[in-house]
Image 1: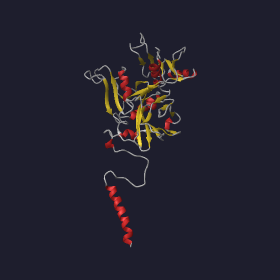
Image 2: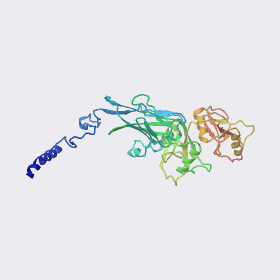
Image 3: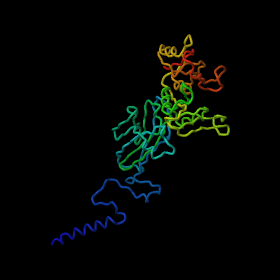
Image 4: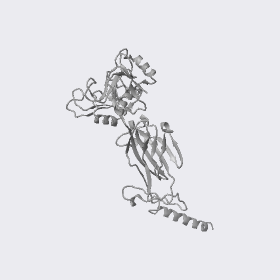
Length: 375
């Protein structure tokens, strides 16, 4: 009696086991559906594309890189759509993340993904921003599928690679957009003389002058624009390099072609060099203070304060010279105790025949000069 009852059950389970072992039936279970279906990749176009419910998700950007100005707003374009378009809207989650400029490797490595930090996450009408981007970012949403990121009040440290990632169920597609700021690279050394900064001191020295350590790309662009400097300096990636447009003895030799001379990665605590700083547009105005007499450094600081401003920093002077056309032939004190002046229109009695920021170095603080103020 018992065997007659068990026999149908045994036949059912044996049939089920056989069905699971047949080709093409792996993972099948009766009465279960998760709402997603993926076609076999071998049935696709040979490029490893996976189709989601017979619909392909595409995420694109018409601009792989965007150039912007510090303090302004910028739009990083990102759009997604389906092929073919589904008959009903799908719920998607969008995440923007960021890889700072000084950590980008070329070509991109898997480690880059691990170093990315979240900027903004959104699902439907709900969204959340993070870190220094909190309150400064939003999605444009000008049309269906438009997930372009709007960043307000751009800061020096916002440069880098941004990833727009669209997640629909089990499908995840993304595109990257590089953000660069218009600016200027300038070499910077300590009041004590050449080669006194370790990496972290170089970082701080640039920050003190309203700048950041330059990236390799920024220094390369500056070299293309004619920057020639024979002293090695730290860059944001921890390498030490210097740009040469006119090969000569003592700067790699006359036999080497023009370019960036590199010492490679150096010990960030023990090795000491100068710095290459990057400064972008300033929101205020740098001006030469009209004063009846020349000033020592202490008097220069006070004179700017009495005029309702503050003594200008080196990065502010360079940015105003390069990006706003500041041109003045009088030497003046700056906040770090150096004396400089900016020339855009070369002329007699104003130094070399090409434009640039002329420097007197760090003279004794009791000497008398003019002063550049920042308002």
